[in-house]
Structure formats: structure tokens, C-alpha cells
Image 1 (spheres, rainbow, N blue to C red):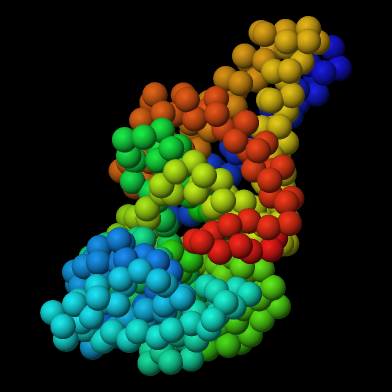
Image 2 (image 1 turned 45 degrees about the vertical axis):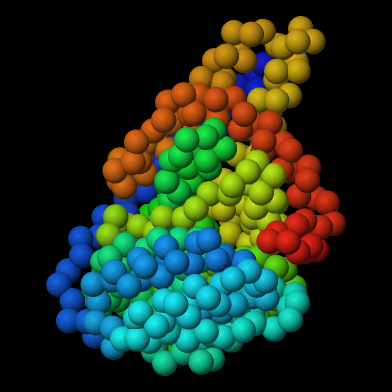
Length: 377
């Protein structure tokens, strides 16, 4: 009886928490791009390591930007790649001499490669506004236009934008696609309640002067990941009103999901290590209730087989969780005109609690691997 009450209580708290986040997302207005006079200059910074298979697609999407070429520059920061990236970049430069593109090289084996790469690029940037993305991304043609209009009509100094994966043909890719849809709703929910705790460096803009005002990544260079969340946290601590989110399909950046379950596990371990270091109360609560709920579902299944919990209560709890998860996912799917692959959703709902338990356990190991290198947690 006690186990049943505890199980259902945790599920109910989870449902209420996600319901609040969905409501927060709806509080945040969808941005309708205004006509811009293209006053804003941008430095697009792209750190990369062994992304030869993706760089060409990203650069092609940047070439397709509907923004004056004299109002933006591209800085590519090579993080000790050992593939044929140079041939791809050189070939692109030769065919697009009108684009301002600079290739620089990061330090050898820095403790925090991406933060070091971005910092070095900012030091050589020409424009006041920095906008970052990842080498495995595709940016929309109106990306800079929308950011420019948003900047010119607001007082924000750091602006986050949406990032999604495309759904694919495998359970692994669709698992990530659905998960990121849910995370986007949590992101906009935090901004909607004026308590932002998530953003992505794959679509993040900020003024150079504000970056210097918060002392960049100083204080967080001992951990490999987290350039986005740590910067967001410092920005909020410095000037809460200076941080905003552009809820608009016009700036939606598409990223490439991890290619295998092994890569996905290492990615999520990396995410878990940085999430533990960010001090947002809403973010901490949301993470903890999500973790507790998924762990409780695994424990409840064990209790069912041991006869201490009936199948009825377990199924009721599972359906409640699946229902609110669906609403969370649908919120972003509707906003960004994405479809929900039902079969993958059902399978992912079953896999997810076990996946979360595994990542939770592995995230406490002393190290993890990412892009061919070993990092300490």
C-alpha cells in the first residue's frame, strides 16, 4: 500500500511539473520576424573536430543566408582535427570568395576545447554580435535576418534559439528526435516563467561586450562541456533581463543526431556532467523530478514482479507519464511543424526509463569519451 502511494504520488508530481512547463512555454510569445534594416553585424563562430562529413552541408546553408555578406563573417575553429577538413574548407573558399571566412586553430589538448575555441574566435572577431552553431548543423536562410530584427527591437544581450533533430529511419535517431522536441518545450517553458535553465550553443547569440562583462567562460574551464549553459547561467546572474529566447521557426537550426547508441550514451553523459554544475533552481527541480520518475518506474516494475505492486497501478502510472510526455513533445512539434512517429514514440517511452537509469549510473564514472578523446567528469 505504501509503495503504491509513493509511486503514484511521484507520477502525479511529475505530471504537474511538466504541465507547468508546458504552460510556461505557451506564455512565451511566438516571434514574428519584423522587417530589418540589416544594422546588426554578426560573427558566426563554428568550433569543429573531425566534421569533414558535415562541414560542407553547414557551409552550403550559410552560403544560402539571405543577409548582406558584408554584415557577417564566418570563423571556423579547428579543434585538432585529423580528417580532410582543410580540403573541404579550401574548396568552399575558392568558390565563394565574396564570403568573409577565417580558419583558425585551437590549442593542443585544452581542458575545455569548445570554450577555448569560442574564446579564441571572439578575440579575432570583427563584429559586436557573436552567434554560434555546431559543425553538424544546418541553418535556415532567414537565420540572421530574424536575429537582426529581434536584436534591433529588444534590449537583450544574449538570445537563445531553437534546435531540433530531423526524424530518421532508425529507433536511435527517432529516440533523439522525440527527446529533443520535449527538451525544446522545457527550454521555452523556463524562459516563459522567466527562469531559463536550458539553451543550446548550436543556436546562441550574444554581444561581445556582454561576453566580456560576464568574463566569458572564466570559472567553468575545468569541465569540457557546458559552454552554453554556463554562459546562460552567468548572464542571468549578471542581468536577468538581458536574456531572451526567440521562439520562431525562422531561426530553427537542425542538428544531426548521434549515429549510434554508444555515441548517444557518451553524449548524454557529457550533458549530465554539465547539468549537475548549473545552479538554476527550476532546472534542478525539473531534472530531479524527471530522474526520480524514471527511476521510480524501473523500481515499480521490479515491485510488480515481486508482488508488492499490482499491474493496474503500474500501468496507470506509466500511461500518465506517457500522456504528459506526449503533450510536452506535441507542444514543440506543433510549433515547428514536425510530425510525431507513433511507433518510435511508444518504443521510446518504454526504453526511456531504463536509458535514464543507465546514464545516471554512468555519469558518476570518473571519465567519458567524446570525439576520440577522454575527458574527466
